[in-house]
Length: 355
Image (cartoon, rainbow, N blue to C red; front, top):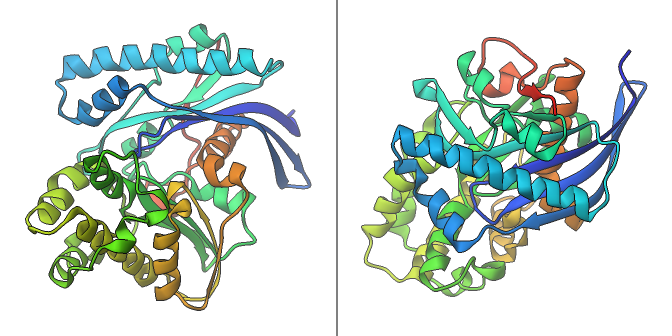
């Protein structure tokens, strides 16, 4: 007998490296309709040492990755256990954790999210549902994006669900099929240049707003092969490191101009990929706080109603949806869509570790 109420924690660590998002969520399902409430939620920042490790781990050897996975699993378990203790959470059905992506190479049949080792269940003393991407890649899919099924179930009133995180991705319904894909890098690039100015990020896009757009660089960015590819498609940090940064760095222009030009590129790519240019677009992720970027997206999509939700949904939407993916896995229901990832069929992804 399936339950109609679930008490879970969703855990997410994204490519922008701002920390581990944890959200305590209660789900209810009545007459096939899901509702949710986000209760306690917080982001636990990484130490500067961990930020540096996670940034460079893409270059690690197999043995180094194995050791990193063990150390990160212990770190993540302690963060989760502290969250449970701090908020006195009881009777949890599960902790649903994404882990942290280090390598994402679906074209080579490979993706690695660290922090998903079996001992995480023992360390947290909770049932843990995690490692949602691997099975999809084994089934010939991109392993990403996985959030769109949550968009369909929890946010169906919007024409588009746009996430502006380390990368931008969008999901929407087309002919009763959920379509979703990565669009471009966002904060992985913007934060890289803000870091060069000694800042964690470009607050509200204030620095990029002072720069000049370099048309030659903009045209070169817009001409990249990835943008011509049909979906399903996804991006990893490798694309930033190997393609984007070398291209941007080849231009002897100021950091302000690089930020301004790249912001324009993000906005143009978003406007280009949407099949209809009006309706409502739920916009979440750290980039939603970048008012200059939002303004440029609005400039290229003048008829779109860009909806920025409450702080809890804006900041914790991915943790919320990975919590839902875990609940769907517990119910043995579909949580990964063939139409989105390109896998051989819809499936119920992830692994369950009992405490």
